[in-house]
Image (cartoon, rainbow, N blue to C red; front, side, top):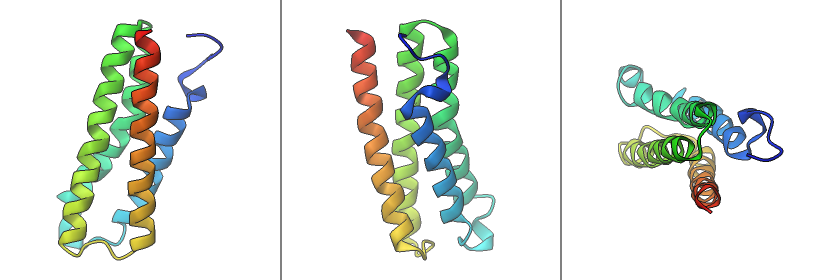
Amino acid sequence: MGEIKSYKDLLIWQKGIKIVFLVYELVKFFPKEELYALSSQLKRASVSIPSNIAEGYGRNTEKSFSHFLNISRGSLFEIETQLLIANELGFITNQPLYREVLGQIEEESKMINSFIKTLKN
């Protein structure tokens, strides 16, 4: 895997961490009754992005890494869907932050897709 010494050196992992922080910030203002429902689900899905990148890197094979990157990408789509639902339900009060999270998700998805293609070549 070249000059990368740790999964922490991967931009996709770093962006995944950023998405976690943004999601946690966004759900702070959800209704209290959503604490153990949509809010919790969003937090878990966001944490799974960098976690699966790290786990895949640690498996030390390109095939495994690619598999875990696909799981991370699935978590991105899960978060996007849940955020769209939360927005439609009126739970999202910070629209600029909401748009930023959606933009980060789109960018991360493209980066993961490119990384997977690189592993296959």
